[in-house]
Length: 139
Figure 1: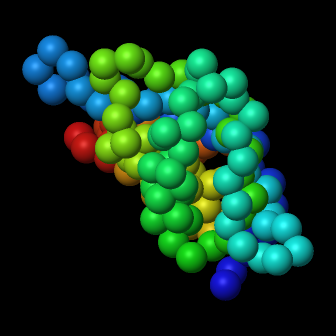
Figure 2: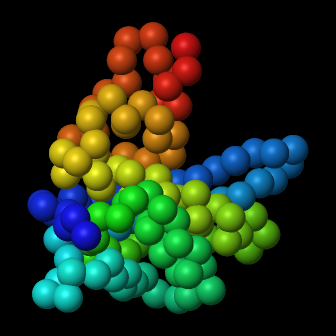
């Protein structure tokens, strides 16, 4: 298994989909590090449960594994919020996937142009969208 080669701090994800009057909402901030000695992906949360309930962590993890695409990393959630009505496992899975892909771009394992496909994610050093494109990569 490939390992994340460098840290990627402060990956911020805020999924906010307005489908009708409400939609999936998810928000967290994560720090990605190279994996520990066992070489496996691990997820730890330092976010108080009243800000990010533990029931959403399995969805974050599933999304991260999908987004990291076989690259191992140690991931620490440092902040987050939820919405009583709109937060869902679906939203946190989307957020996890985007965060994982952002870490790969930030670590140089995906080309910078891939950042154009990440709609809800920012991180220090994120490449700016090309002129005439939105963050989702559309004209």
